[in-house]
Length: 482
Ligand code: UTP
Image 1: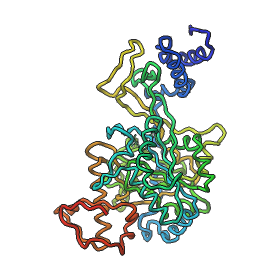
Image 2: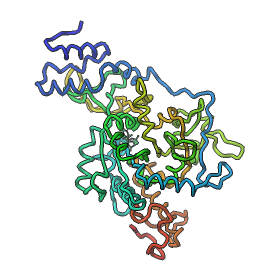
Image 3: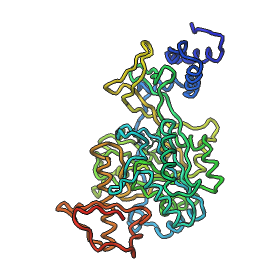
């Protein structure tokens, strides 16, 4: 039977927790002082105890999702080459349309930067991690320079909103303060926090205790942005500025074209009315590449995770020998504010599916009070993914882009690491310089024999280098920052 006390609020929380099999969260309540008790109850409240039983079932894998629909087909897309017979389209028209929207102040940049960067293992928000291959300038600065350069080009202060998490918010805003917001205009950059979800013991489905007065929590995934934009007031604030579309970017990809008029033009003007959420895609080089793939099912666009795509489909080829399901996602979108509002203000709200990730999470043992630092992954973090909103869209556009737009920093070493990111930046910059007539030294494998960084303030795209004062050639082994 549930204990009762003189505190009806405590009793109610205890009853709810015990019904959900999570009574241990109050194991140390009696031994805590007043402020710690208040902290614990507030933290339990914020993870919505009434949802815990359902979340725990997902955490231990009892409610696993991922079924492949029978009518799964490759998603249609606009090819990178607008003259391609696959689907010819008018690049100049859509560029002009996108530029007009940006100039009218109707587009903002939105960056999700609330992740924990566990794979990278960097001490601090990932956006503070060095990204410039020569200067070492941080990821946040690279994007800030893109926003500044695009603002100057289109004659409008493009707003930039950054989603943090409760775990990295203060460190993120302090970093911007220390660096004078990287030269952005006052008020141009703004921050808001995403929500959190409880972190579960992978074996038992019990919520872990981060401390005697705190359940363990983790940020609720980049999908949490769709709710946090609304709940934080950022959506209303941006709408008040006249913004209608968000360029969605992730903080770990310095090569993203954050403000892309062509992409925006297609999103907003390809059909009779604007798309709700659009996406860039990169053609997969081989079937094993670990990116989600754009598909359609039931007349809706969706992304199937690489781990959920059966090998027979991942490896299937069309008549021309191309992969059938080749449209990989680099996590670059344009999202209409109206779509985010529609989701949040729908009767009954909206819910994105929960995905599980197995992680190593230190915690406090609820029976002994001892700290436990597990050697192996012991915990399940639940997260939502922003692309799971795609099937909820009425209209959606997919545009192919080139590999040079995707150089994420995910891991400390190996694939998608600072090293591969730096190499791709140099490769892209070498191609840009060569197109402008600069001689770039290359080794036998054809890779640049030098390191090149180009600030977004110097060039946002290859054509921006035309007419610039550039060296005739780069010396072998040189490190050049332009
Ligand atoms: P990832 O899924 O790669 O996760 O995030 P991560 O947190 O950076 O790194 P790991 O998985 O812990 O190693 C892709 C983008 O989504 C953001 C990240 O900041 C990154 O820009 N993100 C992720 C959030 O904003 N919130 C989250 O809860 C998760």
